Length: 228
Image (cartoon, rainbow, N blue to C red; front, side):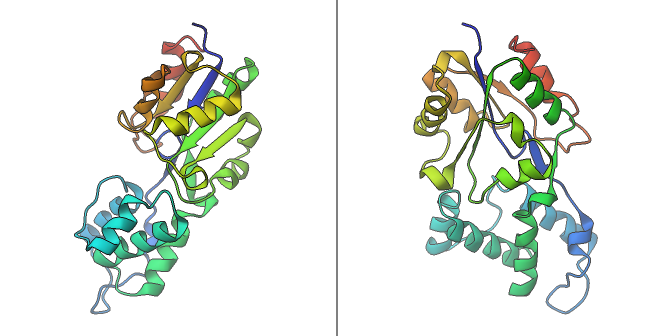
């Protein structure tokens, strides 16, 4: 069946929170010395690749981790705890890093994101963004001039459900007025984003590489599914 709508994931698909050493310039360890290169690299990895749990958590913080994309308060709480366990010695430093995470200006679009979104929209197809996330990503699209190409956003913390729950895909499809078999979901997680297949959507997997290393992943996915 002809594709009438394309659904995109956010982080690792359309945008990426890139490593930026300037974030760590003023960070010190518990002795007051600057973090060494290895510690800095690990801290940045934990901030920008949050899917894998890398620290030990008590029951309270594990609950926050498991529900972080449903509640902004829990999201902030668990990130501050992960940063603390990752070597950030003060709450003030951890809060400063967390502000980077939720700052629209810190997110970098993939090189082909604008072309992909614009091309889909210009062909008269509907465009939706579906993300497991606990903060509003609409300003990020506005920051980069991509908001005119998106018809609908479904964000987990606003709707109370996370991918791969079929409910969130169904919500977006309903808002776009498109049947599942008429939609293509593009994302970087075969488990979370691939959940769209349970409803009958087509699915394309992209690799969440740094933006300099993945220049045409979105366009390739669209071509492979005959959208472009």
